Image (cartoon, rainbow, N blue to C red):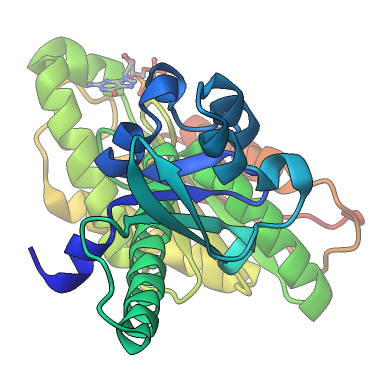
Length: 315
Ligand SMILES: Nc1nc2c(ncn2[C@@H]2O[C@H](COP(=O)(O)OP(=O)(O)OP(=O)(O)O)[C@@H](O)[C@H]2O)c(=O)[nH]1
């Protein structure tokens, strides 16, 4: 144990609303009377009320009396404890308690040195706590936006992305294009080769689409089932149609056998492209509906092909 760890005997972090965010075993030990309620989100006031000893209630007194007090000392269980509280980023309050009895300062200079060490340890720990929580939030957010099977973005991500890009293209007066993609005769594929092979096929197509999108700011997502979608901010109808044709060829080049396909003896995709050349309104579903209709036309035209449409009415 290094000097800093030894100094910090009890550490707790409260958020700006004085709710417990993180704590160490020393904190649970120190507030043993309230140990059963120590949990994330519990207020300092509740912990304070659960304490039998008045000094402890005083210790968490900022929840009752406003701003955190300056460094102070109290005798608790015949131990002398020095408590320091610091305000950190986002209004977080770091409460650090140190037993002064166990390590009595030899002279005033040493007390100052300890105080500084204590403070920097608290800030370091609090920064680590915050970073860990931010990373966890980010990880959960990513998980919620990723398709579990293929690892590409899911429909929720696509919807969020569409909202953002719609606004961005509207402001910069850029066109916005979408490509809707559907695997042909995929039910027959599953029936013939089995659902697990169907999953392998979906993954192969997802990664091919992703690898071939090659467009800064573009997105490929799994829209649901055997449907995928691409969003191409800034692409006009010609560029988006060309990209759709490239994607169609790339999937064809995989040459995944499909003996029951009504198009070719390999897996093919149908693609519908739609472009809003100049966004004026706020209804993003216009683009989705138009791309879906173009996809329907590609299916009707025999599958394994691209159909495109320009959204001309104001949207
Ligand atoms: N293996 C597998 N199959 C899926 C998954 N999600 C959807 N499917 C299958 O995709 C098939 C889609 O079938 P349909 O909507 O009838 O379309 P299709 O057979 O591709 O026919 P067309 O689109 O008209 O060419 C269904 O059999 C679904 O079970 C999945 O995650 N894994």
